[in-house]
Amino acid sequence: MSQTIELRVNGANRPVDVEAAESLLNVLRDVRHLTGAKYGCGEGQCGACTVLIDGRATRSCITSVGDCQGKSITTIEGLEQDGNLHPLQTAFIECDAMQCGYCTPGMIMSGVALLERNPDPTAEDVTRSLGGNICRCGTYARIVQAVCQAAAARKGGGR
Image (cartoon, rainbow, N blue to C red; front, side, top):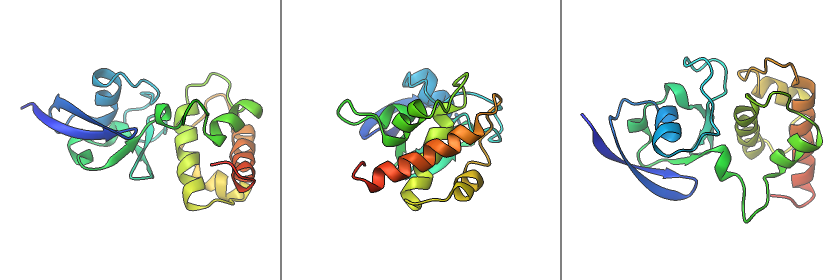
């Protein structure tokens, strides 16, 4: 049965009338029209659907929307601040860390979560942290480079 669930998405409260068992991914994409998180495997294995819930990288395809009430959800669309990209978004562009781009939102969201808990990760830390995100194009080396570059930029005064 449908119910109103209050979601806090990208800093704004967003009530949705859905069944509590509906996946967060479906609600974000189909109800809230935030299409940055991608449907990949539908089993929480590929990372294409990664969003942040209370700052933690979370697979939205296997997270029920009912479990998200009262929590802060950040999607790739919510990283931009006052017209400025997040340093990791900028680094992805500068390092050419995307090819087809399908994995990019999930990679960036997982990278942002890593940088929040470890502002100065080694390449090995990045590789380990993003190990659950799959890039079918194989741009892993550039992705690791981008996360390390964003960490360095943040140390230099970026957010």
